[in-house]
Length: 229
Image (cartoon, rainbow, N blue to C red):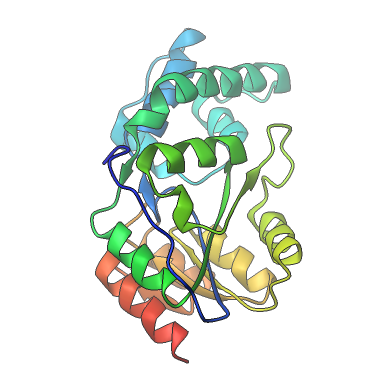
């Protein structure tokens, strides 16, 4: 889905807050991110990695991804790789993102029960561009990401920033990786892990997720139930 959906905000009468991770939770970047990684690798004469192998890195910090894939630790080189990644991401990668089937209906149902926010370690400018491209930016009352200089690239730090900025005392954190769940626990928030993304069910359980949703439909029911508690 790319830009054809238009959301019209509706009145919301509850004080629930649902803070969503972006990649692997709301949007599927399974083509975009691996292709951008390979673009950067090949730009510096490093052999491309099969896309299926690269999918396991989705949700992690770009610098650490390139450190792992290139086996190099030189900060200048790693920054060059990140810059090359972002070069392709903003030219071609945005259009390669897709919404998970059923996610629009889920967000509409959740928006009737509370406020929706995005908290992603992807740069905020990239988050905004992806959401605008897919036509769902108006569904979120706030979109938070990391800064290009690396600030807020730690998920727990980002969540603390969101909670402080929005004056939120309690929220549900929804994400597909263990680091999302661990960050929620550090911030004393309830967590829902989604195993339809790029983290495994075991990863989410081991991180201490309060609930696990294996499908978008299950997540929708979790959010509706949470809003009535």
